[in-house]
Image (cartoon, rainbow, N blue to C red; front, side, top):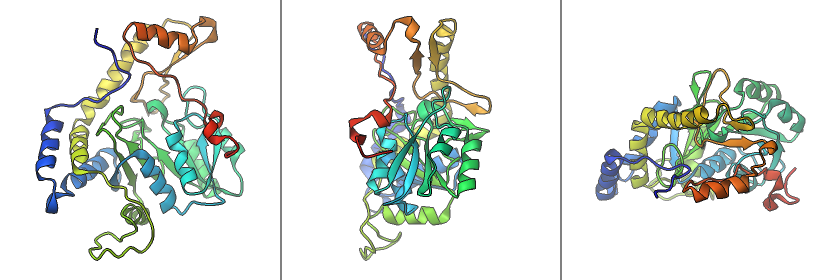
Length: 329
């Protein structure tokens, strides 16, 4: 019996042909060709001015924080429910993650919880578009503007999702995406930094190449920075994926619709939410089970495994992780 995976890539001959061409010819003066094509296509799809291809979404969040000069003594509010890759870059730059509660329906940052976390040291709100869902960005932007904060959008799981007809990745001052093998657009590993801010883009471009100014050919590093670039073959696969964006997003929504229809009359099962003015691309069909069902997640996952169905638990609260013992507020 063929197992049913949780989430995985859709790769066609288009991506294979692009990857083969990059492997054969993406060298010397053509080394940057596929990364540039991917960046241009992705920026156009999302609706932003600048896109920078990277090795991961984590590196994109790290670049965003570093480019914003957030560091020691600063606090960044982040949802308590997310993967640690959302919060780890805050620690990379020496700042402190402050964990805020999430909305019970969207599982994304709750505005009132953000207000309760604000201090004189708060510099940014790092929102997460969890499992393809989006928070109330009107409410988040109102808080950010009121307190002079920036919004960093972790859109890793929400490629193609929309809030008020604007795609995920356009609601923050800067955003980052993931192209991990499980994501809607997959390159194996990979990420993208996006922004409309010219200065922020220029700063990120310098930081991602060991502190060299863009166009430098004399290897004159002006500071110690990072090596965050996407290789041509991965970018070639990504180009094929973004050219198939409509198909890939539609497929995610189709799969979720199967679960929604099959489970709509089952009491005690809550699936991913899609509020008004929002389009959820349902990166992973996710269920919260009422304790009244007597099906704890461990029992359900074991039963699914017997049937050849892969599953995974919902993210743990970051504040409960051993990694943050005594380290975060």
